[in-house]
Length: 367
Image (cartoon, rainbow, N blue to C red; front, side, top):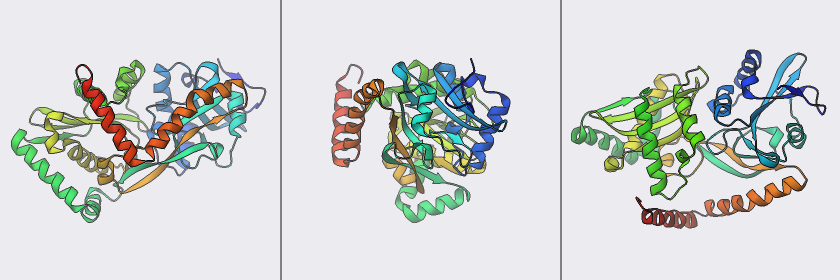
């Protein structure tokens, strides 16, 4: 049900499915005028897809002079604990507001009935949530706005050995395993199933939580693979050797941004670095499709360092209102978050932690 709040007559809270065509058009228009990269995670299509598997998804909508001028998607959990929409898999988060509209974060939480709002990929230039970030994190990107040839030229200049070695491995893969073939937008659901199986095995092998063990994530990815809109489409890219898939990636694209999400490969072909080959072909195909940027997502990884041409900044943290419920939220989340941050910011300690997780994973049945 739509409801206006007494606290702010120009603000209403709706389910994503209740958004009108006028409101979704305004959301896209505001996003387009924001000057921020057109990340598909920030559009109404992704919010609606999450709402289909996370029924407590909501959107706060601002109206001024008969026009919708702002949108804040979120999920509301027990005790009013709020989360960014799709928290845990969403790689870009925040509100979409007209210039000059800057509501107080705590007042917004009060209107939404939230005691806290947690985020882990808040995009830069979100003035409503200034001061709420506990940590700034780099999100590497590949700029192909000048075309793939220009990107290759950058790689030849900044990491010539990497590019030469990867291209040599691609040729060797073709000679030894069958002619290589790349499909930028593979629609076969079986190929997606293969990628998800690889990724689940990779999570277990490296001692990390298997995201695809969560039914809502599993279903969300399958739904997004079928989504075809100009501002948000699922893109499954697959590298084949002969008739066999050797590496794959699933992400979301808008007209100008490919948000990289779930990459993996067949470990049997690891010596050929098929994941790196895949990313080069993705960059080439994205440039040909008019995409100007590939966002590799936050988190340190050697392959990202090798491929990137620059970085964006995203933020992790939370907005917390005063009160008992907010205190319970802080106790349940903040100590763990700070421990993770402590390890993440100490590379040697993080490396030891990864090695330990890998050893533990190998001890598990089937590991």
